[in-house]
Image (tube, rainbow, N blue to C red; front, side, top):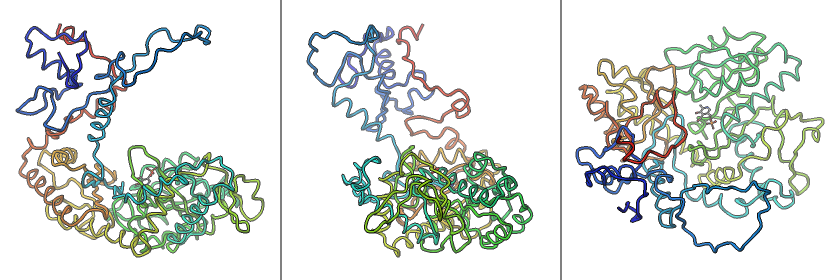
Length: 550
Ligand SMILES: Cc1ncc(COP(=O)(O)O)c(C=O)c1O
């Protein structure tokens, strides 16, 4: 028989005695469906192939490729004498081969299974899944930037250094800070960089042995306490309050001579601006401690508030959230850290310095005796060039007013979603304005038999990527929605209408719609506990159908 690529199926795959059943089983096997709980998941109208119309289920390449197939014709090698001293491979490696069109189709189909911001509304809270203009991508691919090598002589990369210097200047201007370290490669890496600067500053004051506590609010992103602990600080939690804010009196009650810093996110992970942030900064400074601000949510306040004016000493900025690089998928990140005057001299190497008309890279701490005292180096090279180009391209194409408007629109959109849903869903901190993301809890689902997870899965059936679930941890059954500035009113209206429909359905306890969801996705609901506890990380070739049936 032929599989859907028109190629003879593997010889060992014998069907059962009923030819039609055998063909269906074979098709399912070729679709990689053997042993999966959602086998035959095309609902009431199963198809022979397992596909759902033009939405094709793509098997693993090992399931469709054959070791004896190749997409290229290579000449037989001339006779040669191996020089591997008997270490050459004796058996074929068994890599799956496909023809060129099959290879193309395989990867295109896989790419079509991805849901991205280019596919639809992506309301994943705390992640800022916003539109990335193609212009920025194009700039990043200009050969002069894309092909630059970190070991090139500095005289040949003057343009790249100038771009980095400009980017750094814009970041310090926007944040009202004195210095910037561009090299950290993610938000969490930026936290590490900023906290190492703080640790070095404390040691320079001779307080390294005594100031070893970092205050972290309960609502913080998990990376904050992890960073503090990683570099040897003890974490002291600032308790969560019912209004979602951090209160200056709670911070004051925890401040002592042992406190090195606070790590506070603003706007915080509940989507709220911290109204007492200036008083909190003052209290810390008076006690000789530092203020680390997690600036991952800077996209809500660009052009509206400068963290330096609020008393922040160190803050990372996720370029991959605020400044136009796709976020997610383990792709490249950049988490530059801006530093106040109190910390500027401890910024890590490398950094850029202008000497006459030329730009130089200061690569080593020892080059810097005197006015600066870098704490060391946090990356091998200088960071992610492509992200720097995208970020600068974003800044220049938006201009100051455009960036401010992006923040305003992000906040407006989140509040539009809040207003559109607040009569049906419950808001843990009352119906007050939020910043760039709106946080609901699951109180509204009480007695319905439906959970936050069920709502998220039902959203998939409706064609939406789910919102962030169960984060922040301080809110029960949290649903965190960040629409960003990218979506139009029409698309937000449809999103709100969809969520309203789901909410009303949940309130009527129409459990069937939720419990089995997603019904229409290529894969049905996973057993998440099993997936976490016994992950299957290795593919094993299934037994031939005839054996499996025995
Ligand atoms: C508030 C907050 N802090 C820190 C981080 C960590 O950033 P990254 O994932 O780049 O390490 C994130 C991630 O989005 C975040 O939302």
